[in-house]
Amino acid sequence: MTKNICVLVSGGGTNLQALIDAEKRGELGSGKITCVIASKADAYALERAKNNGIKTRTLIRKDYSDIASYSKAMRDILLDEKADLVVYAGFMTILDENVCDAFPNKMINVHPALIPSFCGKGFYGLHVHEAALAKGVKVSGATVHFVTAECDAGPIILQKAVEVKNGDTPESLQKRIMENAEWKILPKAVQLFCDGKITVKDGVTIIAE
Image (cartoon, helix red, strand yellow):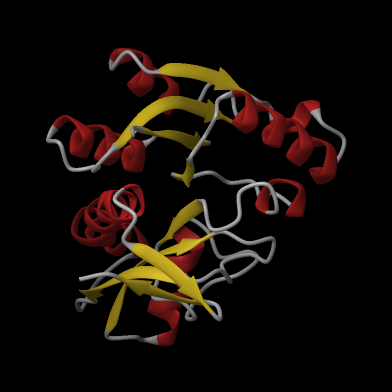
């Protein structure tokens, strides 16, 4: 059974590209990217999808007065697209329980730090790496986790550590974490999900060998 993967994007779509490349290599298990949904009309990720023959839709955040109405609209689109898995790939809007309750343990996000460090509200993009460098951590990395209504708090699926080097800037650390961690563990987590290898018990994931 092929699993329909809907990818949510807001920007350039580098993580989306990593997923597209993984699918082309046959590394998403039974998963197939069937739709890319953007919160901004000018997101370059939409071009990446179109260039690879993937259906695109836009759901513009500023067209909605609040998160609740936006979340309901997103839920309806995801149900319409028959999403088996929803992947946040640089998606900058926190959706509420309207979506999370409709897709329990079926939505995953990649965060550019080792949760529970440098996560939660306000920790996105370069802010994460600025905070990590300000704290002087020697390793950072990326985490793939299930999405819940609480920001960055869902069960952790995979993590990968990346060394912080002397002289790192937020930009250089961001690039190293993307290339060495995010682009590797996000497709891997999708593959594990699509192959039915992940179970969640008491808020903790168990990954079948």
